Length: 284
Ligand code: NAD
Image 1 (cartoon, rainbow, N blue to C red):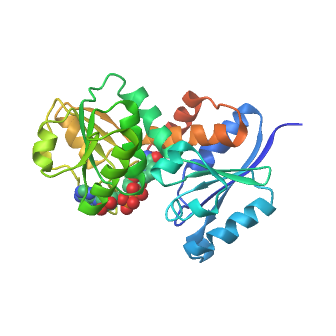
Image 2 (cartoon, rainbow, N blue to C red):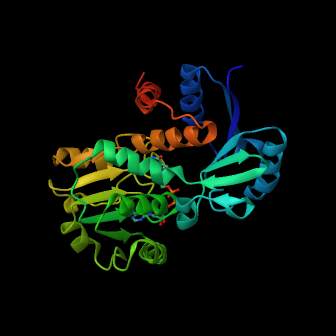
């Protein structure tokens, strides 16, 4: 009997997600029976507080696991039995394994960013890095960045309280002064080895770029986590200045690679999932 899995993604406005296709194609290649369903709150006309009922329903219907996305990544925390260290420290879960009556939460956004960064910018200087955006995904990326060995991470957010709260939680986990909220973002960028965009700026709905053109220097590396589109205004500007760049597609793939491993206990072939993602996102 082939291994057999039923997985879902809970979130709002997720019809365009590439995650189901990434999981199911890889499962096909491995010879697994694997069905990945979208549980779209928007399409179902449900509020986010339907989450407890959806989780119970998924368990009762034999789901093996769930990915969780906006706006449920924090709301799911009190509904779980166990959390991975990353999920607890970050305070957000994007992967829930349902096994033996238990709900175990993980955060593969963090491990996904780290894996994509190690692959795409392997020898990048990490002494000083500035990250724009301290929201849901920004928290995971910042934890991953310090885990990768960033010396000091400066956080810039249009909501300064968010940047300060994230800096505080990062220092509690990684040590005093490893993260600061920017007092002067221009000076911080001028002194930085690299920049991370974890704001939604660059998406069609949020045109433009969080890092002003004039701040970018050719010695910066630039990582963007936006992946709709892959080539954001920020990355185009950075490329024109001959900066080394990393787009958000790698994080999207590697969060799926790790979630697949957690759901099935089998490590998928990351190279094959990356190639499939390239096909899915190639212009017609
Ligand atoms: P969010 O709304 O939770 O957080 C965004 C943060 O950016 C907010 O704190 C906001 O105040 C801040 N911000 C907005 N404009 C800014 C600016 N110009 N300068 C500084 N700060 C600014 O959103 P999120 O869930 O963290 O998602 C952010 C982006 O990350 C989205 O585009 C999303 O698609 C992308 N994302 C990518 C992946 C991936 O796998 N590549 C995974 C998750 C999210």
